[in-house]
Length: 319
Image (cartoon, rainbow, N blue to C red):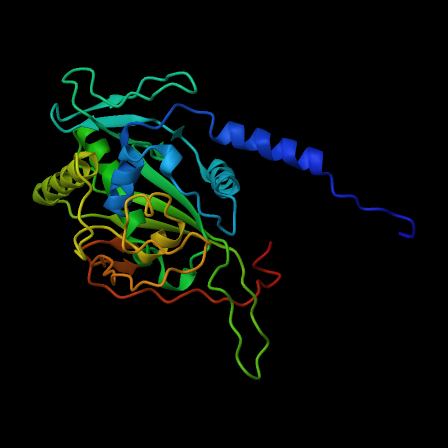
């Protein structure tokens, strides 16, 4: 029946769609403020993105176009979100107050300073909020086996949003929810003599509880202020192997400012080949967390829950 059928790659329409989607995804205000996400990863990279002119950035080709990865994440977020979404707020460390960030036109600079004291503030945009509870949605290719404790930057992001919510409402909020779509599940399993289990996308929701003591939240606020000062300082931070500073090896291959900053861990040479240099070993910060049946606690001691069966659903499961 398919004899005589032709399949022709439509270059023009493909390019037009890619251009339109890219324009929609990147068509907002110019990102000039300090964002919470700047403080969760390599601070040298964050400093470079604020200080190195973009014509000196080196865009590193990756397996995926980041625009389409963001699009997939936004589609997932739209599916699971409810309540109030995308409330863009900013916290001023000097005024100790949270404000709503004014909306500006695309192509103009976003507000980066507190209108009261003119100090640079910290912008944060939680995915959505339900009954004053922060929800953060993630879609990832990370394995489901090790859970969210293998992504401390997720936990710090929620802690940052919860801190801002505490400041905004003057309430003793100390937890949030993490919604994770593991695209590849636990990557399946192959055992000799058994039917192989292929990777299967999975969804998990975690309660992330932080300590309730005010001293813990004060220390977290001071830590964010310290990191913020590093990224906004006049000189780039030294590349020190400090476990108290967020930095992860997976950032290095796709870093756009590492070459301009002569970072010793920049991976590629001029021909996109691995540099003949010995990188500095990175000790990534490991949070003291425990996963329980009631959530992820940063100060918990309980063990991991038993994982659910990966067997295929029965007829009863699908009704």
